[in-house]
Length: 257
Ligand code: G3P
Ligand code: MG
Image 1: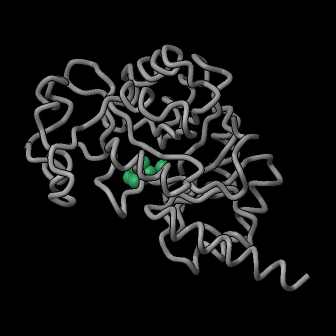
Image 2: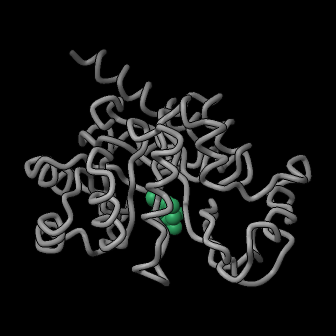
């Protein structure tokens, strides 16, 4: 899958989340229309063990519900409005399941599934997500990522053909942490935050054979800079802005040769 991704890959972070409510089918479909190369989404288990696509632990910020998502069954979550917090034009948009996202866009784009089981590190999320990847025959289109190395190890065991990317916290992209975890998790990509990104870091990770995908980058100057440093991908809320920044940097480079 990774070999099919362009360099640099534009990952629409939670979908085209600058222009549509994050982690909804509307945001994923818009990302495709905006010509993003891939989408990123956040996956977690809800109360009855279904895999839902949602960022926060609680419903309060992005829906008209309250409380913890892990306490509610899918049926209750499906009643919530996950669009109006962003704009009334998206009223009625629902929290999607991972299955629904695979169904809607799984054959149209590449999908970075962030395994977001951070408060229950060894739950069945990797198992459930892997089952869905198989069921929808999207193993050639999915990249798993997580800050949770246990989840990545489990996903890799279940689906060896699906690449995994380790997300690193600010300040934790050090040589030691990455080399230690890199041996323990057979990851193919590293996902550092923009705060940690530098030409040195990217070159160091490249020497070790990793792709480097940086999150979250919404400023054209930062995208241009990452492009010059040879970044392999950026997570952005605004794929149109990212595309413009990359194209203008590529044109500038071409005019100098
Ligand atoms: O995958 C990159 C990024 O999504 C990680 O942070 O909190 O936006 O899921 P977060
Ligand atoms: Mg995420």
